Image (spheres, rainbow, N blue to C red):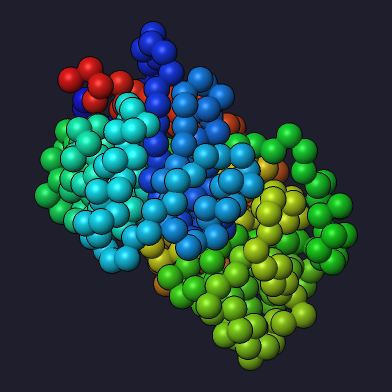
Length: 368
């Protein structure tokens, strides 16, 4: 397998569906990595694979999975590397006659890959963030959700032929609110110029800088409003911050929203100030609705955003964020940029491309 390269989509190997067990330590169905995992597993099931989960006992995600119709075996994992949990997973993998074990997130990857090795089942780990390699070293192969993630692993000493980039795919909604319906639902003025961000409300997402940038934007664009979709530990601090900046009447905190496409539909321009990002699923979701993007130049984001549909700036630079947003607004070509964004999202970040790329990794391992 060509290491540190994006998987090219090839015709699938002609064989029966695989028995795949995904292992995850997710706590709740609210984060981008978890949504991406479920997008992949739904596509795998639709393609004829037998897909199930191993989860961590005591976490709400197990019940959320079962409510969605998935089979989930929950196992108690007490510490970062739990010998009893590893043995229980090994027994489960053997009993279920798994063809592939696929792990997600760090603690589940440490335990799941060790258990897969003991069970002699090929194991793949998806690295969803700019993570350290130690949680994934026992995997037979690693999938990075961007070339940036793969490069980050290689820089830590992971062999190039052990990592492959497969972009997250975004499932486009069949139906979502129109712009006017969305603005009515979320009480946003119908004639506003709406800038939006979807992110966890934490410092790592760079929202201090986007809020400071919006203060500058609001002075020059009187009808501009800023919509924040998401929740997090710093929400109260950000709500206080907008009061101190004098923009509280033009900033809307919508909290966590599912489906996210309903609030996205209200936006004209997507602002993504993250300080550390593997790929940016929220960016692709915004692009899929025809939205130009101003983002920070970190992690895998330069692979997602190009000059045809957005702008990249250095992280932690509120002035640059404001300047690029204002330039795009004043040029008056948000619609044409948004069209280019949608075309790229549909062609490069499709669910089918993600599934076929992942299948290619599986089949390469199984053919050895």
